[in-house]
Length: 354
Image (cartoon, helix red, strand yellow):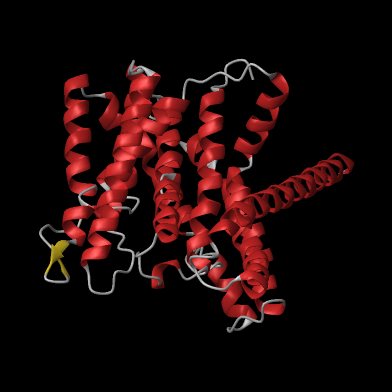
């Protein structure tokens, strides 16, 4: 633990909480409710902040791995095996619960087949597909990054930002109650590569910016993001929330994500008990992400059935559902860890007996 960057652990915990927070809006009527009152604006501000979740995860990956000399060999690729075991184990649980508890349509066989396509939770696990692909190409993109000078690294990041983070212009600007598209979106799905290189750049050069300046800049960009979001949404006839400014590949969300990362990445937790808890939660982020889907399926129907009147009045419940789902996901993750520990011990004993 001596060499561990506890600031990185804080970022991973914040990212996993943000994943749970942003999913609140998937289970309610946020995207079908006009952005015309103060409460909906507050919800949008929360939702827009939570959108830093995926960027933070990839920034962490770039920070931790982007400057390493990783050989193109079995040693690197074997590290994906524990990830796949965890994904398949939790996906199996999800499939069984979806089929026999939630009574979702589809045969058990088709559900089991969905595990290997990382689709056990109806595209909820898209991040796993993205991360595994990124993990496989890390040795190659590290060769690119590590063999160019600082100036060219800056050019690379700027070009990638232009290619992958222009969603505001691509998704459209208000024009006669429509969104006018002015740029193409071919490179949008490559945005994780951009965040990976930014994370690597921060790890290598450790930009020195005062925390107070970063905080003010973050608040300013958040204000601009939310004002643009409200303006674009309100300018349309439906006045429904528009996501063009606040996608994972939005330039504004990218700026906010990098600012949050720079605010936190070099923090040191002096209290050893708190540090231990944060590090533990950080190590469980994959399991928390995977379990959160099924926990959400259990929690949100209860709250919506018993407390939902309309989207505006339901805002306060994000302060309840988010911590409840996160804590239950942590408990499920700890239980999985315990099962794996016992299973490993039994397996090792069987090998010794042979």
